[in-house]
Image 1 (cartoon, rainbow, N blue to C red):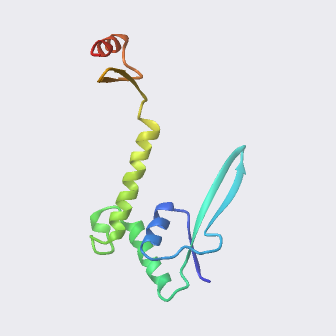
Image 2 (cartoon, rainbow, N blue to C red):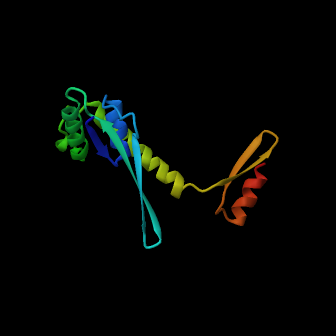
Image 3 (cartoon, rainbow, N blue to C red):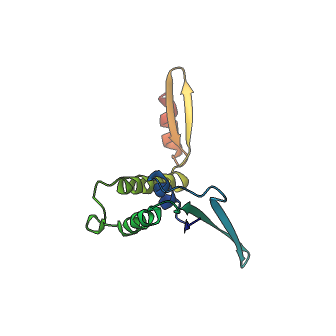
Length: 134
């Protein structure tokens, strides 16, 4: 069996979607390193490139993926699905980072058929105005 490893989850997802199978036995491995009291886990995704032409196809896709920073750097047709998938996964990552870091919880107040949302950092005056709207 001919295997190709990657630690890039976005790349692994794109390769699988484009027909490079993930190996059946231990498709993902994890190496745990304990350094200076910090636990570091490194995950590796193993792709099965033993089928005819799969290694060459995977190498071409990986090269295109890694080079795709600007339109001029695209190695494949600019409409190739790899670029759309990469863009979607990068957008997903940005959206998740916003959720994790920037989104503040809102307090929901309801009276009858009226609802107001009050941000956690709203001043006392603004809170009073919002409650009065109910």
